[in-house]
Image (cartoon, rainbow, N blue to C red; front, side, top):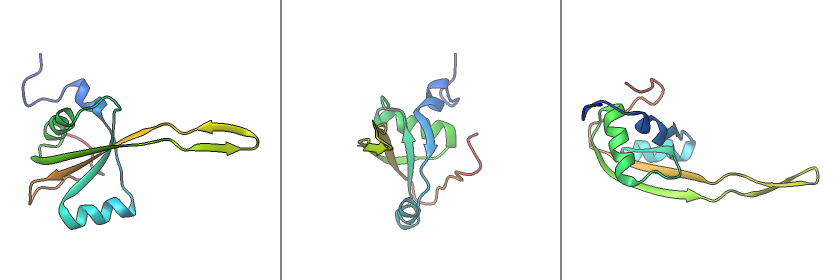
Amino acid sequence: MATKTQPTERHYQILKRPLVTEKTTKIAEKGNWLSFEVADDATKPEIKEALQRLYGVEVLAVNTLIQKGKMRGFKGKIGQRSNLKKAFVKLKDGQTVDLMAGVK
């Protein structure tokens, strides 16, 4: 049985990958926000707990959105991209996460 401070397998499943784009980098520099692609069934409290356990930071707020997949056509074939759930997380002032270093 895992203790309160150790991450579980579910915490690793919730956070799929960090989203690093020009827009998310500007937001991160401006107000200490991070963005992640998360599991479709993840809730805000689960995302907050996963970040706190995996990265050891204090999370102030979690905002989520679901980006609907686009219809795409290529050489007569029609398909649809998958939906994508994103989480924007505000960290306490003075705390940072090195996304390129990985988790603890």
